[in-house]
Amino acid sequence: MTKSTHPPIDTELTVGQVASRAGVAVSTLHFYEAKGLIHSWRNAGNQRRYPREVLRRVAVIKVAQRTGIPLAEIQSALSSLPENRTPTAADWKKLSSRWRASLEARIECLVRLRDQLDGCIGCGCLSLKSCPLRNPWDELGEQGPGARLLEPKG
Image 1 (cartoon, rainbow, N blue to C red):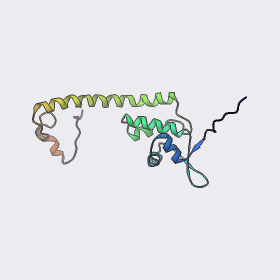
Image 2: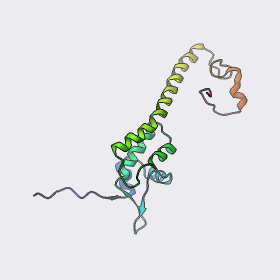
Image 3: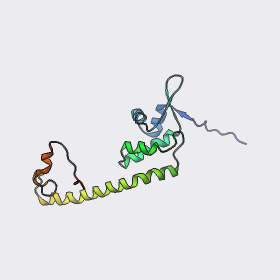
Image 4: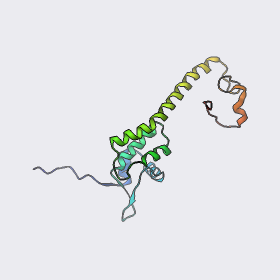
């Protein structure tokens, strides 16, 4: 029987190790922790330590964020998982199915916006104040200054 030459797998990681391996800044980990997305504990020297499983959680968070899922929704979904267990393929299937409808709705909204954008530029008015498609009778101006929703309430 041959002895393994691989070093033992760390079961607890420093904040720097997690940041390096997950490809995020240390401040991102602190932010995720403040939002309840991940958890750590303090060792005898009062230094943060993370379970190895946090790497998978950070990967799930990053993927969800890339698809535009708000952190509040990510936190809600992750709270349904056991805290000290690596998320599994079944966990990911459960989480992603929760986000699929929201993602599809945003894709449809972006497609409509893209298609309307071509038509708007084609009309030649280029006036948000008087545009009959996006802001008829300057209704948005009556709501005060600042950005307004692009899609009509429905």
